[in-house]
Image 1 (cartoon, rainbow over the protein chains, first blue to last red):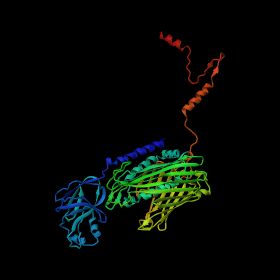
Image 2: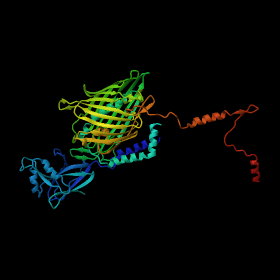
Image 3: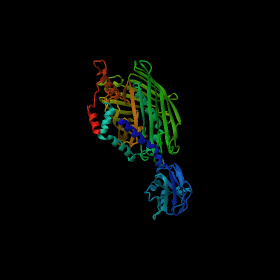
Image 4: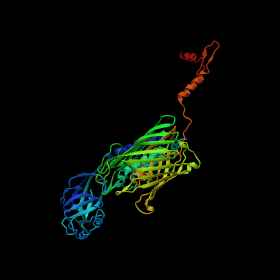
Amino acid sequence: MKFLRLFLCLVTFTLTACMSHLFIDTSTRLQVENKTDVTILGLDIVSDDGSSVSPWIRESIEPGEKSKVVEEDWVGTFRVRVRFDKWDKYEKMIAVSCVTDTRDVKVRGLKKQSEVGVTQRDAGSGCNGEGEQTYAELELEFEGGSQYLVVSEDENGKAVFKFR
Amino acid sequence: MTDVVYLDKMLMKTGLNKIFLLLALAAGVAFADPIPAEALTQGGLQMRDRQLRDIGLVMRGGRGGFIDIGYTYTPSSEQLQLKSQYGVHNGYAFRHHYGIFGSWVLDSVSHFGFLTWFDRTGWDSQDFFFFPHYGKFAHISSALTWGFSYTNKKYDATVALGLQHQNLELASHRIYENESDSLLFYWAHARYKSLSFQGSFYRGTFQTLRFSLDLESRALYGGAGSGFKTYLPNLNATIYRRKSGDDDDNFVRLNWEQNLYEQVLYADVTFDFPDDGFRSAALKYYPDPSRMIGFEASCIRRHERAGASDLLWGGAIDILFIRLGYNSVFDYENMFHAKGTLIAEIKFQIGAADGKFFGRGAAKPAPMETTQNSIDLKKFMKSHAEQNMGTTTRDSEGRKVLHAKGIRYENEGAATTSSEGGN
C-alpha cells in the first residue's frame, strides 16, 4: 500500500506538467527600438544555411523610433537578421561581401552579441549588382513573453543589440 | 517475498525514493542536447516497430493478460529542445503510451485474445496529457496497433493478426519534411513453440519481416527453471524495407539476447546488415527473473561520426512505477535521439497468466507470498466466539450456564457500605 501511495503521489505530481502553460511563455512579443542613425528595414529569423527566411518585424523603423509589438512563436535561440537601409561604416566589410561563399560573411556576423559587424551582401549578380542588402546577423536567445530589443551603434561602427 | 515488498523495504532502508524524486527534478537543469527535427519525422516507423516487438514478447505466452501504460516526464522546457534549421526551440518532447492484452479461455486448450497498443509522441511548445497546445513548431503523431490472437496450449502455438494505424496529427510545414498524413498497415504474428514469425505490410508490400528463435527455456511458459537450456540464445532477425531513391535498400537487423547468469543477467546486442554493422549493446540486470525491476547499461552507435566517439553510453533504472534513463538506447530510439539528459518515465507494466505475475520478456513469474499474515478480524472474532460457546455447561437443573471470561467485577457488600456512607 505504501508503494501505491508513492505511485499516486508521483502521478499527482506529474499531472502538474499539463499546467505549464500557466507559467511558461510559448511565444515572444517583440518590440524593436532603433537607436542607430539609419533606418531598420525589418527583422527576420533565418535558417542556418540562409535558404529560409521567416519575417518577424516587417515594418521599417526610422532612427529613434520603435516598432509595433509583434507576437511570434519563437522561444529559444535563433539566428536573427536585422536589415538596414545602409550602414555608414561598412567600407571594410564590402570586401567580404564580394566573397562568393556567403558563409564567410556569416562567420563575421557571428561575433559576440556586443560587437556585430554589419555586412553588405550582394543579392544580385556580381559585387556591383543592384539588389544589395545591408544586414547584421547574430544568434539571439528569446525567453518568451514581452521582450524589448534595442539596436544601437558603438564607436567602432558595429551594431549593438541588447534586450532591455 | 514479493518484488513489491522487497522493493518497498529497499526504498525504506535507503530513502531511495526521495533520491529518485530529486533526480527526476534535477533532470530539468541537466545539460541536454536538442533533438533534431529529422528524428521526429521518423518517429512513426520507430513507434510501429516497437509496438510489434512488444506484441511479439507478449505473444510468447499468448494467454493471460498484459498491461503497460506510461508517459515521460520532462519538467523543463529547456530539457528536450528542438533543433530546427532556424535554431533551438524551447519546448517538450513527449511520449504517452499504453499496451493492453487480454484473453479469454475458450476451452481447456484454447485462448482467444484482444490486444491494443497505442503511442502518441512528438514535440510541442507546452506539455500536456490529452489536449496539446499545437504550437507553430509542433510535431504530434500517433500509432495504434490492434488485433486478435488465438493460442492453442496443446500445440503451444499462437496466431495473431490485426491492423496498424499511423496518424500524423500535426507537423509544422516550416521545419519538418513532408510526411504521409495517415497510413494503414496490416500485421500478423505466428508462433510455434520457440519459433515465431511476424510481418507488417502496406498495400501488399512488406514493411518489416521478423523471424524469432526464442531458444531460452523459461519456467514461466513451462520450460526449465535452470540448467543449460536457460542459457540458449534468443535471436531475431528483422528485414526492414527501406528505399534510397527508387531502389530498394532493405537492411536486416539482427538481435541477440543472451542469458549470462541465472536469468537475472542478460546481454543484448544488435547488428545491422549488410552495411552498418554493430548498432547497440546492453547489459541488463534484473534482481529477479520476473523482470519487475531492472538495471541496464547500454551503448549505441549513432552513425554520426567515426570511431569510438560515435558511441553513446548510458544506462537506466526501472523500478515498477518509474523508469529513469540517461543516454540509454531505448530513450535514444524512442525519444527522438534524446541524449545528455535524465529522462523520467512514470509507468506501470505487468503481465499475468495462470495466476502468476511477470514483467515484459520475463523468464520466470514473480515469487508470490502464499501465507496470509494479516488477521481477518471478523473471522477471528467469530472463531473466538465459537470457542467460548463450547464452554457452555448445564447446571444440575438442566439450565444453560455461560462462563464469562475476562474482567469481572464482584464486590459483595459494597452497595451496603456506600448506602451507609450516604446517610
